[in-house]
Image (tube, rainbow, N blue to C red):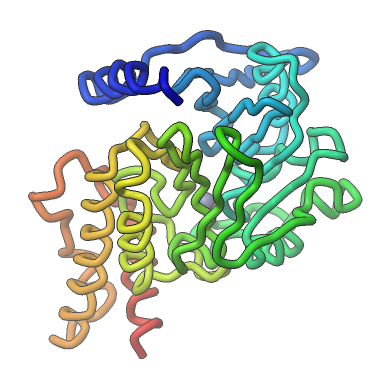
Length: 314
Ligand SMILES: [Zn+2]
């Protein structure tokens, strides 16, 4: 990894300078789906690590000496354009898909990859993906669909982990970690140690009030501690994190986000003890001024997260 030093400095300079990498090398239109407009935006983060955005959650594409590791595969209909984008950067086959968690905007594209690709996820996520329960806070229209049932089980994880799992060796090493409940009960953190980069998935989707999916084991009370563990374990091992839906962020951003979530739970617990109702807290809680650049809360999500704190502290 001799040559990575200068590259890292240059790339991080870009990150710090303008907050978003601008090394967009290509954009892709899905062929054979006129009018769908499924465009995957490709950003090169390192010589062999790409961030592919659009169509759901952020995907990471890691090109190893033997094949390609893909982290998250987006919404239904976005697996094929993602695969096309990957083919534009390498001739190597996709060998591995890692899913950070169960949500449809991160796993549905699995079914559009060849069936011999190994799919890996946290053990709880593997269970959640068999059921594909929608998050309670997202109202469903029409009957529930299970994309894996519709495809005869293709795309479901066959390899799982509970605390940590290492795949590959040397510069190709990928380390999966689990630091506790948050967005769901199976949020995998995917680390590329040689590149000092990680994909945090939706436990760190961006600077916002998190979607906490209690239907799939998410926790409003525990997410702050889980994020803290992530920061303590990885904050010195990596220079930057791919987030679930936002820009690349620094370890300091993760540390702040952990505190933000702890502050939120503590605010709600204190207000509950003072006799306030869920609705009263939802009507008055504001993002503290010290948290700069945080998106204004979606009212339903804010209320749902307050209610979850109440339910978890009964
Ligand atoms: Zn999610």
